[in-house]
Length: 269
Image (cartoon, rainbow, N blue to C red):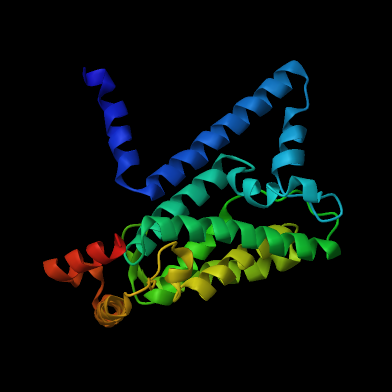
């Protein structure tokens, strides 16, 4: 039975949060990509070119509107193990940080929107960079999560290398600056996609309701109940703002048990 324990632990890990499932999907698709490419090399088939042509995002001169899915699918391809490893680690940490304030659904939608917005920026800018290589990688989605979390709680402490304490805004700012500095390099298109994802994260950070399918509605003969729900919602948002300010000043670990329970309950709504 002990040999099956890691599998059970993996299943439990996947059930814990949608962030874990996104990381698992990213690694699974990368493994599938590598297997297909290796099979192509072994058989002499051009499977790598096929994958890049149909699922990576091509510059606008080579892109076809009939392959609209590539605006999203490119985010789940990577150019190598270190590429997917970095994006998976950043997704893991940024996703968990944002889950402190948001629901799983909101985190996933922002991640996907970050990929799409990065792809749209890449397509538009590739008019001036027709020689750019096809775009792959989830960095736009990852930057969207990091920037959103940093805008919500800029002083949230992050421990780099396990001991170097820096505020979250510093990490987000560094990643944005690295993307800006890379606009003159050979990966200018990729860095523009990063900035496109960062932009959507910044814009939606204070408007998570736009990423939710649920909102306060009014049915006929329900005016009083609707007003009561709005009052309760506003009271909860005031308390949430106070807790976010406290997290920014002293960190999440300094919240009381009841404050943490409130955040967890708010995130499940």
